[in-house]
Image (tube, rainbow, N blue to C red; front, side):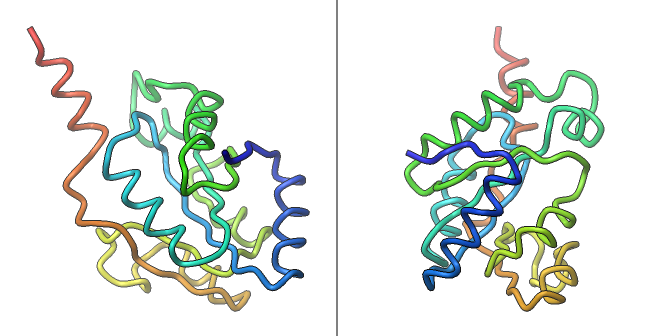
Length: 158
């Protein structure tokens, strides 16, 4: 079972892993309501290295990006759920709409994003990761699942 860490704790853990020659992979997202697309993305990301860090947007960021009523599940609960998934080693909650500052600080070996970006160069954080010598990879299945769609389906129930 993974652990939910503060940024400072996670930075020390990543440094320790990398010093031991392990490849650290970073994935991020809102993960508001977990669905199979999330699990497939995280499993594929974990396959890219030795340890998987999952960064989740804090509640203010999700509300800003997704609108009223979001997140459905608070950040602390989302983090706990993600940490319980087999592919996940560490979870961290970050502030702001972009994980770029966190990537620059933690310097994971690989930043994984979903296949909906098309190419690694189209990932917004590509330049940040390349600047410190990391790689960006697209992983997971086609984006056929979305939390917004799931919410709409639940709202439509009689």
